Amino acid sequence: MTPEDIARAHQFREGFELIDYGEVGLPIFRLTLDAVTLAQRRISLAGAQSKLPVLLIDDHIALPAPGQPTSHILKPPIARFEQTTENEYYCMTLAREIGLDVASVTMRRVRDQPFLLIERYDRTRDADGRLVRLHQEDFAQALGVPSQRKYASEGGPTFKDSFALLRQAATRPARDILKLADAAIFNLIIGNADAHAKNFSLLYIDGAIRLAPLYDLLSTVAYRDLSPKLAMKIAKKATLEEIESRHWDQFAQDVNIGAPYRADAGLHRDPHARRS
View 1 (spheres, rainbow, N blue to C red):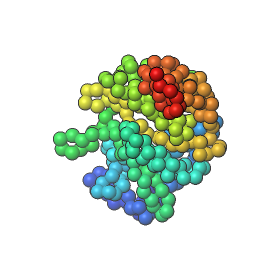
View 2 (cartoon, rainbow, N blue to C red):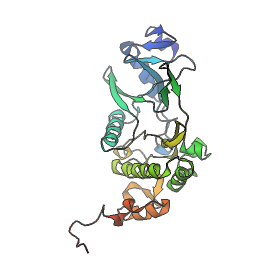
View 3 (tube, one colour):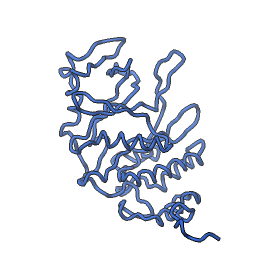
């Protein structure tokens, strides 16, 4: 978005720029036009999908003044793939409905084009009601791995590394380890092969360190052109299609988690099997 794009579409108020939906709709969605870069046909935050930090003021979207904390992320569709906004909104909503801790998201439209507004969980308000930033770092940052190596196949963090990080860094590791295990299972259920190290984060809040709410949940198997290769292997299996119930037992052993996530714990047990 350039100054020319929004020259007639904003108002100045208290240091931020209010955006009029009708005027700025198309410029916002220029964020998605063939600036899309897919390394090995994968989705990546920096290359494949632009995101715009914004403020939500009285239900109006506003551009922040320089240095001003933002309250939301505006996420337009990925240009090369159909209905990615609806896809992500459904997956995020489903995760919340079944009790997972996820970032709050709403779906809106402008000129019949959908976009997501994602509330920033790394924000709080001070006594005067002003937005204050909270520190967060994704797993790649926390482990000192450069962003270009966020995929395990490229030398990035594995699930074993990720669980070890929570054991070392989280204030309540037992709780967050279970949350990460739930996330791994949920990503398999929805067919998300792109759950890499930059899609999990640590959040520093109230003197504690915790696993941040989940974000960027998308069913990648809906798009044939995207790689089926898992960002992090599960039980040494590289694709979603290879994983069977018995592999969760190996996964549990690999990351050192307990019986509730093991295949012999009853989740996949034949209901007609005789119990001793």
